[in-house]
Length: 78
Image 1 (cartoon, helix red, strand yellow):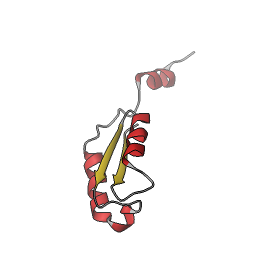
Image 2: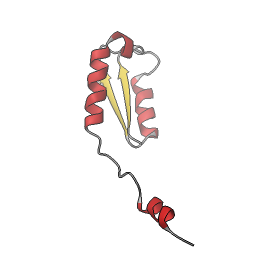
Image 3: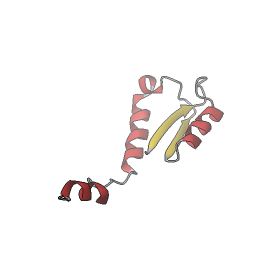
Image 4: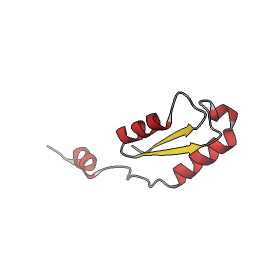
């Protein structure tokens, strides 16, 4: 699952090491660090956070609405 982890140099709750460990535990994670971000960057810098989220979402590719397995399960008659 693609995940965006926002972290800042001023965030004592999510140090650089903890952000890296979090990303390592989630293979599809992207860590975005900004010098001015704190733990409440979403409230303090909503424009920057919004831009980071929009850029992250723009970079994602859509998954098909159904997978071959789901299609097979839905259309197989007994």
